[in-house]
Structures are given as structure tokens and as C-alpha cells.
Image (cartoon, rainbow, N blue to C red; front, top):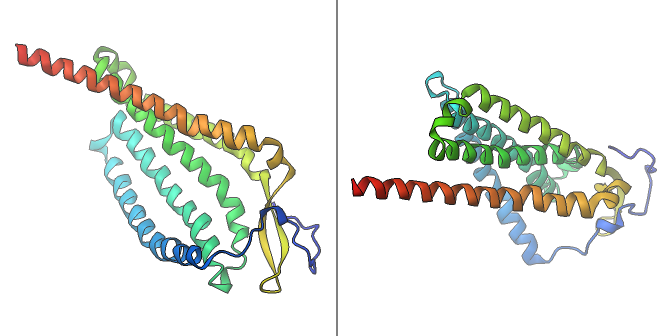
Length: 241
């Protein structure tokens, strides 16, 4: 949300907790090379490949449970790339392009959508792995579980839960007018609200670490280990025969 209570001619940065010393020349050069120049072409490549994936997996002859997860994964990855451009490239480019000075207006709203897309991508991957596990290890049950309808239901549930879980990120930041000492100009910065400090450790650190990193990683590791083990057993049995 935009903080309209800040006076237009404010001379003090209201979000000093986020201000740091000017970047070193080396950091500025790395930021220019990686974010400003390298990120756009890489993002364009990612956008094109995900559009191709969406086209392929949405074909009628390609419709099955596994490809449904891959279709939703391509869509969420597409959104991750787009929101990443707003969050990283535009926010960094405004230091070099004056016309992007109002970029925080888009970034503050794009950030929660980026987290939503990221959450979806992670759990679409987990769902696809579980679908593969059922097909390999529980072939009799796969006809009941690994269906197109079931895959769509699971993907829809992941989308809804991701939106609800990450909706708390919207009120965690607002926009404030700050005085930049180096340039002597007023700039718009994204600043944390009191809610951010209230939930930061639990919500943004521990829950993110568990739900977005540890739990999916352990789950995928176990599923893939079981799949490889079962496949190796079947291969051994076939060789014996």
C-alpha cells in the first residue's frame, strides 16, 4: 500500500532501516553486468521456452496427469520470470534510467505475486514427482489416482493455497518518500510496515525455510530415491529371467 501520510516535501528518509552505504564500485559493476545486461536475455529465453512448453503440454493428445503438472509448472515458471523482471531488473535499472523512478509502485505489488508463483512452481514439481512415484511403485492404484481430473484438482488446490498463504505479504510493505542524501532528491522506496517486523522471523524466515525449501527437498529426495530403488529392483529381476 502507498503511505499517503508522508509529506511531499519530507527531507528525512522514513525508511532509514533499509538504507545502506553507497554500493562499492565492484558491486555496482557486477550489478550492472548481471542484472541490467544478463538478466533480460536470460528471462526472454525462459519466457520463450515456457511458452513452448505451454503449447506442447496443452495439446489434446498430450493430456495426461503427468503433462498436466508440467503444464501448470510451465505457467507458474512463466509468472516467476515476469515478476522477477519487475522485482530485480526494474528496481535495479531505476538507478540508471530516471524514467523508472516510480518503479517501486509496481514492485511493491509484484513481490507477493512472485512468491505465489514460486510456491506454485515448487509444489507443482512435488505433485509431478508424486504422480511419477504412484505410476512406478503403485501401478494398480495409478489408474485411480493418476487421472487428468485428479491432476487438475490437485493443481487448482495448490494455486488456491499458494494465493491464501502468500496474501499476507501484501500488507508487509508500503511506499514512502525518502530524501536521498547523495543526489539531494526525493525518491520513493519500499519500506516494511509494523506487520513485517511482527511476523518476519516466523513467517518470512522459519515458515519459508520449512515450507519452501526443507520439506519439498526432503519429499523429492525420498520419492526419487524410492523410484530409483524400485526401478533397479525391476531391472535386476528382468536380468535374472
